Image (tube, rainbow, N blue to C red; front, side, top):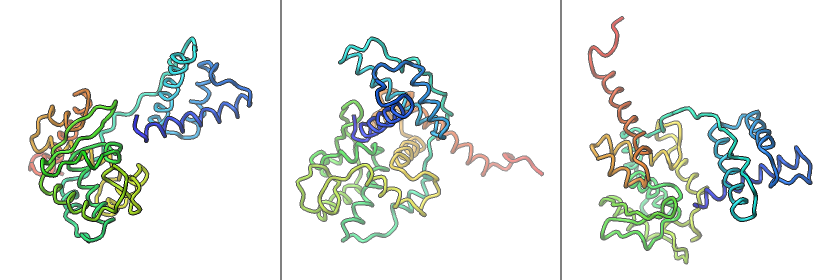
Length: 280
């Protein structure tokens, strides 16, 4: 699992532990919990306004924990399997409009400043390759081949894939490498002190770069991944090619971007066709 996933699961389990101690006393054995004990925690989370998506992930954490206890420590059943999470609203992913992305990547920056070059390269690479945040922070410098115009990432479930990139990104990577501080870190992206970039740093960089420059309400690395996929399909790319570039194991996961493309088509029709709007 990625470092971000491990951190999230650990946080969920600490929250479950804290709730158990508070609700049932310090001698409560969470390993022997029953499904009704877990339901109390889920109800507690809902009463605090935790989103259904976050609650769903915490339920998944509990399932994984008790499955581990069955596999390694002889637990006889998994009480979390009986938890039924609330259905999630099928909201479409947020994307950045192509003209906003163009202005963002064409904005001037100091090509002699390491931080400015690195931050611009991060935005460019996320949008140009569609890679996940964890894939970018874990990207090894040795796995980026500027001459061939391709890089190798380690995706979910330790699956490797090759992603091609164009001349503009080649130039940015080459410039970044000339300014990159001397470091023993094998990762491509580092902080100015030479230590590897972590997810929280990446998130802050993307948020800062997008702030005030794009109309999209969300400003996260994943928004750039969504934008990459949507713009590729709008540009005529085959959906199977986009699936491979994103590293999706199922085509059904990639198909949500076809809905985004159709929404853009509807929007253009409403703006352009003289009979699209009802008169009066």
